[in-house]
Length: 253
Image 1 (cartoon, helix red, strand yellow):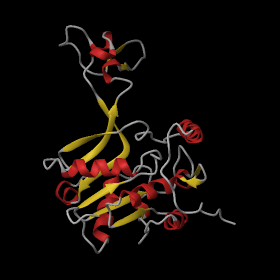
Image 2 (cartoon, helix red, strand yellow):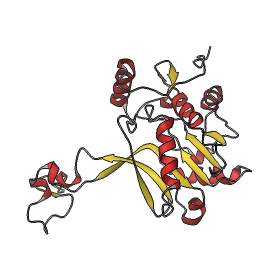
Image 3 (cartoon, helix red, strand yellow):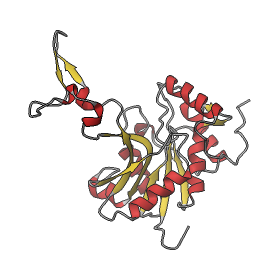
Image 4 (cartoon, one colour):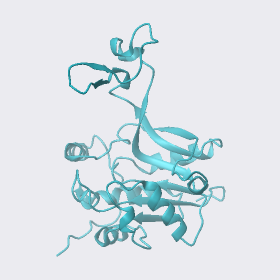
């Protein structure tokens, strides 16, 4: 860490109770729990004074500590439901920690192919964009909202999701290449100034800078199909995983 680097902390969110991929955070991909790759990424980025796993589970906490993350306390269960917004546990955690940091990063385990290089690029981008409160990972959409429709209540007719009445040629009638470029967020990376949490009550603030993910950095493991694809990508080497220096976490007896 250089002297010019502002004090920073990395959070690895890992609540229990994943519904679409049961036990996702501790499920093994290429020999290690998914959580291990996020912790390795944060530690190897070389930017953070602490790498803290936020979890409500003692089991996940044990795995996180094995791979080098700190778990100074468990997240309250009220902030660990399937509908709990991140700002709740994030604000609570920042208040609970005795130290203060200028910058925080969210390094989620759902993106196993994002490595420390992506974190370093995102951190540098935030520092180089003084008008931004945060950077957030995005990628070009594959399914353009200009070609999306809503169906009426009885299912007989439909209308474009976006109003296109002002256009000479509607987006849904045009070629993809002619449509305005639209980006969708992925969960690969979020880095923000900690002041935005208190000032705006959000984790991102009011001015966001786009962090464009490359290759498979933005690949999210959200369901079982994603998991199967992640296994195939890792096995084939088409998408390299971050290097995990620890031995595999031993299964419970």
